[in-house]
Image 1 (tube, rainbow, N blue to C red):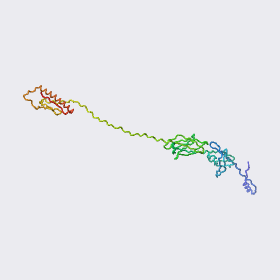
Image 2: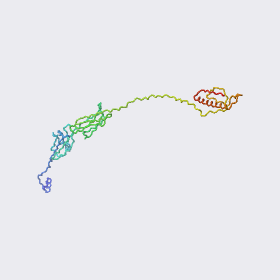
Image 3: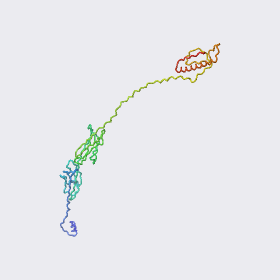
Length: 341
């Protein structure tokens, strides 16, 4: 077992304890030096190309001062040697390429006799896209169009744009390749009064480059109003001629249902023939106005019956004639009274 190392303080204490003051040289041990470490940086882009000329700095995390600086060589490598162990901040100060963006800062821990190896990827600078929206016929700028920009094959994030008053809108498109990244632009909402343009526009976004995508629209056709028909004039109304009511045929004489009253059995005196002006015959009176002449023979029963029959027939004939005269509105009827025999 190794004996414990005696220090100058131990020797002094021992001397004082023994009351002997003896001066002797004392050997002091120094702390061993910590061996340094190293930092190796490899610089690439997303395509895997090694990048030369990228500048880096190691910053002291305590006070932020630059401890070491350097640039990548033709092989894209930068080696910091003799770095005192500790924690540092690695900062890229220049990419050395117009197509690449600076990498974000990161912490580096340096340990003794060890090389910290880091691979830094510088992304490509985005492309600047200008979208234009115009009238297909006149070239007039159109506002209010909504355009979706989608990466091909559609694995990235879709960007939605809306054209302003001047019919344009700008945005930055991420680029993952030196040759460029493909996008598709599709209109999802047309400006007011225009048809939707369903034809997609292909876009190639290259690093740090400007590109333009133009979309056009056709104005909607106004609905054609139905033709105006002239007012229809109704045909003139023709009043049919008034047909006079048909005159019914004359009603044939109808025999009276009630036979005329049989005159009295006393025959009238034989009057002188006269012309009657009335429409109906005057019935004979019951009492003859002139008594029979004296000296004439008395009538027999046979003569009386014959007269009655003749008078009855005469009355029937006279009644029928009066009815016919009344219906035909004759003004006069002549009736002759037979002379008594």
